[in-house]
Image (cartoon, rainbow, N blue to C red; front, top):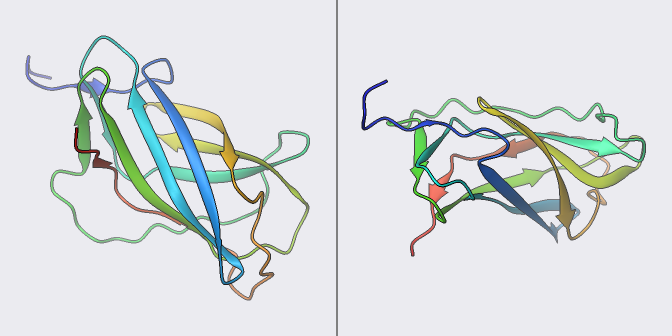
Length: 139
């Protein structure tokens, strides 16, 4: 790592907010990450999403990862800056979701209470989740 490279964000470096909106039985939304540290940090790749049940255990909801190329494959945030990822959940036909989603990235994971519906009203046939790359929020 050079002096200009930012280290991957740890769970202590970023806070997340997650907002779901109902859309034709599915959920679409936004995951926002905010750098709360005093240093520049990096968020690499697309965030992983895993809904949790009422006991805090992961639901067996599959997240898909699309393979579109993006260079660079990360966003860097100065202290106080934010980035957003568009997210979605196609449907669910399993145990009830708690409204908490585990967000995973190369630097760690965080359990994030979501605002909006706890789970999609659609039951399938698709039940996968997806996320897009983080984009820096304009100041």
